[in-house]
Image (cartoon, rainbow, N blue to C red; front, side, top):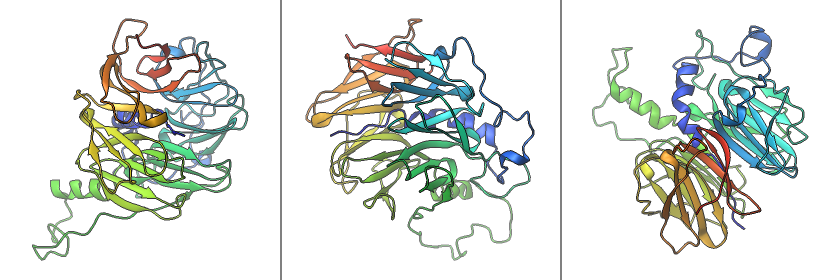
Length: 371
């Protein structure tokens, strides 16, 4: 049975906003009790009349319907994927980037390290985590946005984000613990500097900054195959895999040095990752070997869904919709037009039981039926 995680790629789309908002060079954690009462991170989201047309970054289907999340702490609820209402009492105005559901239990991650939880399909909410950047701090992941979140069951879940933020919970999100991932292979120190480009200087050069990005890449997308294998899509050609539900992790390399924004998964070992410049790669052995797909586009891919038999639908910038009905077919390109007759950035999509899709992104959430 195919497994899909909509919008894992769109976290990277908003990452530029996240970087500006968090100023991550040096940061420390600030919990809710130490924040000003008027900090948007701890203020309840405002109910707005046109939230359905604002930026939506992720969505999921629960037992009760559809839930979509996006900018300003907006959470939208729908019983049918057509009529939407905005949830009230969401305990943050931080942009919400990622959503995961087990039954009607929902967890959402976003900017300011926020994680909020609803036990009843979005009717009521509680804030489980907040981590706002402060200027006198040192932890590089403090204030980092959560870019994806995935729960295996109602107790066990993971959250990932910028600067290699990697969190795990085993109590439904009541507590979140830092995890680490394997570093890149050490390169030979041919200059004999002990790994320091300039041992007499406290300044950073361009090589130092590149090294930081390679060592602590942004973790953009988290996915799980039907066999329980986990993979993380990251920047600069990095990826990670786990064969034991996240107990241990291996670092693997993609045949491309750019960023992957997310992926979709089918049965054991079968994963497709997508990202910058229309790049997409597929593996049937959990990353031992990769095949590059011909997407026919150079605009970034942001989200997707997996269909039986290797079928897939990928979406991205400029309203791109790429479709194949089976694993042996090439991808075909269509264009989504919004209600305003635009071709906006699409962050992801969900299958609709009556045919077509629920799509979401730069111009909110909409029903889409390919012609």
